[in-house]
Image 1 (cartoon, helix red, strand yellow):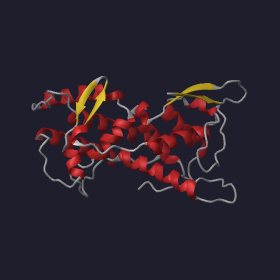
Image 2 (cartoon, helix red, strand yellow; image 1 turned 60 degrees about the vertical axis):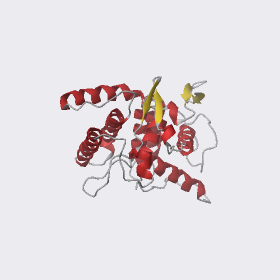
Image 3 (tube, rainbow, N blue to C red; image 1 turned 120 degrees about the vertical axis):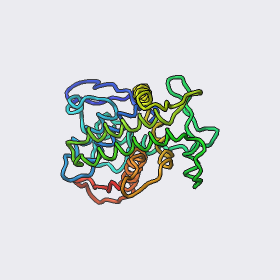
Image 4 (cartoon, rainbow, N blue to C red; image 1 turned 180 degrees about the vertical axis):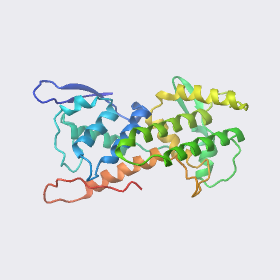
Length: 276
């Protein structure tokens, strides 16, 4: 972690912050909150300064009342130029972290991750799917059933929610729960087997999902990057997996386009970028 300072008007020193150096130091729940709050950036119908504050607060775990007393900084700068203690530079720093993150396409030898000192194996099917191989030798039927059901339930729940600012927390919570349950189903310690009895399996998945609640965003992005290939997509039930990597890509593209624009003067509105 790095140390940063959030300048508070009328005080000396400001608030000292712990700034992550990679997404591996950011919990998944905070990153999902950040991505959902980031929907407001560039939306002319929403207050952009408030949107910046909510994004920074979600990512760094800072209460909004504290951020409302902070110095704004230069909201018109084209790109991140270093921390100056203002709200805008903190958002720029976060964008830089997201831009530097590159999901890893795992090989058979690296299809694992470590969490709380334990090693978890990932089914090699994910890499095979990306390579175009349709064989599924490393995933059990019960695992495929549960992974499909988790996505189906998430998708059906999302369909009932109107996409608007008031539902961001609710939608983010559904994605967070989905990723934890998918991890519970597909990530294995040596000797782990998903129970076949339904009631026992549900308890097992719930317990393991709780265990994964502190998973970091970088690991989740790696998983999301290639878990998209596990299940086939259809127009009736599109995959929910991909939320993390696609939203992160949206942010990278928006930052890249912002840097590439040439302006002869300051603008009072930030450009709105497509979510697709």
